[in-house]
Length: 231
Image (cartoon, rainbow, N blue to C red; front, side, top):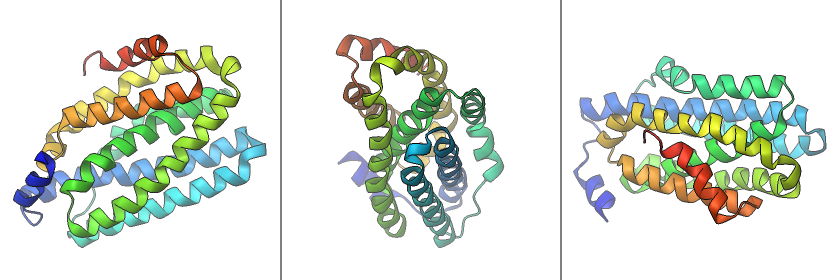
């Protein structure tokens, strides 16, 4: 209700809103581009799932085009250099893992961390979005759950063999999400998105994903704690 009320007070045409939107929108566009590329890479690592991953990759490209249209609708130029820097460390970690053939780490980064981050951000954004962006984002978030589900199903089927690598990859990558949130929290607030709500939604989605894969409550709490450091 608080966020819905906030949307009534937002001036989508103001310079302040557009300035913040240029960075938030760029992050969304870059995130969809990263996902597009990551699913192609995963297709090489998981040849038996290559067709399914190609479909997910194409979906991400459609999402990217949708969010580019959102920027045009508000006459905003996305700050892509900012967005590339925003994802730089997570991007590098994925590239290192894929080069080493660490499929489990790649799935944790893309299919769990990035997808849960996107789902949380989109769900918090929808109530405060302009009408055009709301319609686009509502369509996108429905498909993001499919992407999350792919990683969950594969990791659940290979849980025992994947468990140790998942825990290591979690320690290495989850803290990056909080740094990323801190870097964008001021801009997100201008758009009516509160940092605490983003954190809460992400933790719920990520915890549910870890539970679906096979981790117990105690393990999930310990794994989540790595993210809360510095949040």
